[in-house]
Image (cartoon, rainbow, N blue to C red):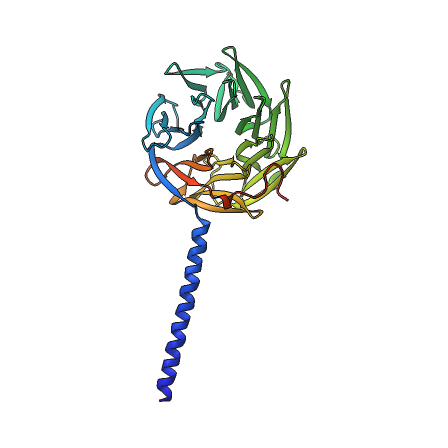
Length: 389
């Protein structure tokens, strides 16, 4: 009898333990579900290896991507449609190494594209036909990242990394151009080794602002703004000598109040910078995987309708989304499953706070679009016009 009672007690104890474990696992599952994107769909666009995305005022999506064969493709998806329309816009870039086409749209929903292939090409639609111009021809080798933005009056602005002069000497300047009466006006913004990674936005006056890397002095993140007469340059995060390098894969967004927001990597982590009353404040958000290749990497900072920052960034095996909740940075996984680094990722925020993320899938070679509705809980309750206290 005693042994039977002991067995029954042991069985009851085991049952209770399993119930507790099941409850714990259920809670973990619920917490994990809350940490993920609130809604997500994924669709194929075309085969490619780097992407850029823009959304126009009507909600139509515009994507450019570089194919494995060195062609630049433009893809268009009308609002509330599932069909993509793809067309080749640059026949050959002569290489697929460190070439990153970018797209922007104007107030008339017309796409504008830049791509640095040694030459800097500007491509847009004129009377329904694609027209290509070479910007600053004969000036030497223009490489790596270009940025493009369109003013409210339709004026295009470009920034790029001018690597070599025509005679082969290194130049390594960050350059900017805008069009006046059909002519490109070109200026240097900064020297040294400036702008291999750069990102541009325009303010309410149509003046350009650029975040960029400055490698010449050990590796810094810098910021330049045009006041109508000259460029004003400041350090966002200065070099820490041999112990640190900042400015990789930077992205710039301007708030409606003129506030500046920058996402970027140093050698080990994702960071965010914001300026308040003339002073830059930087925050570390998360670490990145060992072996991360910054030349293939990306960050994109976006502002939701409350003005709160969101950062989409790539990592090895994942595409991730960083946002503030209850005053703290949190991250969630948008895409996972690859064993390689997700390269050439980009994102844009729609007017209804829908997050559109484009990325080349290293598993099957398709450029894809992930669509995520940003929940109200993801938006910080306070405006992001100044550094978070």
